Length: 238
Ligand SMILES: C[S@@+](CC[C@H](N)C(=O)[O-])C[C@H]1O[C@@H](n2cnc3c(N)ncnc32)[C@H](O)[C@@H]1O
Image (cartoon, rainbow, N blue to C red; front, side, top):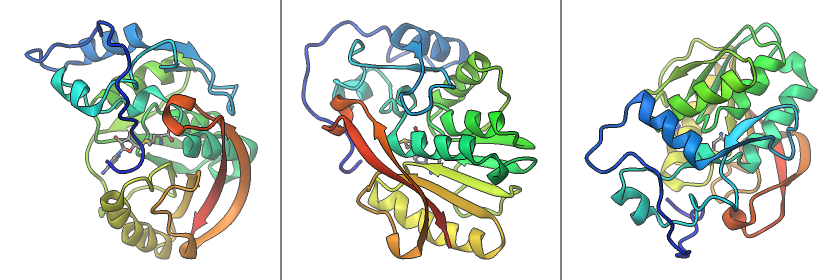
């Protein structure tokens, strides 16, 4: 992972987690999420409530190594990333973008963008992420908003899609991931899929392929971003 995870070691509290030898199950993933997050509204999308970690939880203060030791991938699902908040805001304020359409929220994390698409009247919503914790996070968060979203845990990058709109919040933070996404997004856009991206200026954003739709100032978690607010743009991939 490049450029997005803090590596400062904070005071270590006991983390209530599925232990090393415990297999991840839907039940213990849900328990873990409920024990380590609070139901709250992301600041830029107050109409959605999510199970999120904040400064009161030490989830992100731990290094990747510490998390790996207790069997956890970095908990992306525990935060509403700036790109996702911007994209969710755009979809809610411009419901025609998704209304009646089949929508895929790629790299869904918490499920924020998928839930926003459902609220904006999408004809069907799938939330996709390769982190198995996201299945439980999306289930809990969708339920908290009375929303419906299917979850797909496969790596869909490069595959043909059964969707009219692809939404991707905050995905250009990693060179290898971006390198796979860019040709796939280009191919999908050529084939008629509306590909929209929310991004706060991550390192691997392919600016030359993007048309700006909206710009927001999104409040973010200081422990993650070393900033209070991130200028975040919603782009159409062309
Ligand atoms: C920075 S988070 C963004 C989460 C959410 N979209 C948001 O904006 O709050 C990036 C997400 O990408 C997911 N991810 C990484 N590689 C992926 C892949 N090949 N397919 C789907 N999701 C992937 C990670 O698991 C993580 O949940």
